[in-house]
Figure 1 (cartoon, rainbow, N blue to C red):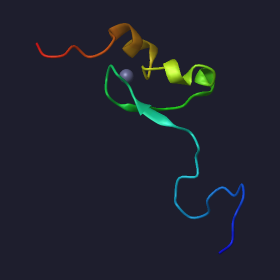
Figure 2: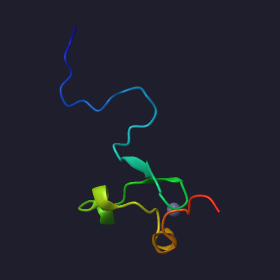
Figure 3: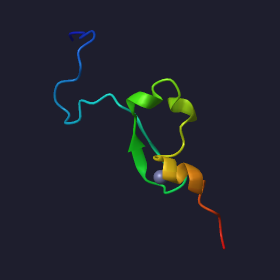
Length: 60
Ligand SMILES: [Zn+2]
């Protein structure tokens, strides 16, 4: 077996290393953005609009 160090995959379709996570407001997954590079862990909303809306209200 060969060990490949630092190789970026090869086959597998998506070669992007950008993480994704679901927006807590609209529930849609959104991708990492440059502007969040420092604050990605704290980002919960896909957009400013969702940020204002806040998390979807449970029940009703
Ligand atoms: Zn959203």
